[in-house]
Amino acid sequence: MRDREYSLFDPRNFTKSIKTQRVDTNTGTLIPLVDRSRNIVYLAGRGDMTLRWVEIGGTSTLVEGNAPIPVTTLGAALAPPSILNLMKAEINRVIILSKDDIVVPVAMEIPRRQYID
Image (cartoon, rainbow, N blue to C red; front, side, top):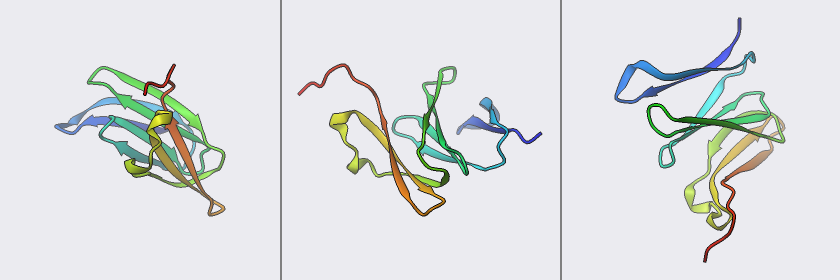
């Protein structure tokens, strides 16, 4: 079968994976984008319209999610932290390159109940 999967490893011990997860049966490669300051790994798949993410909270705590992308992914990169809109609770921005040479920024935001000055 042509299952796509990812594995997370502890950088101090590459012999045992922390987690291995099957994603889907697509043949496109997954592009890992690592945000070390927030312990989040973004997975953008070539030809996909979904951005997956895994938040690593320790050796046993992993939170997964996904976000729709309005275009088909050809490539992806993380934006520099200096351009993030912190007042809108934006923790990261993933820049997606589509097949039609269109660059689409996808904001990753954490919802907040209120803004505190």
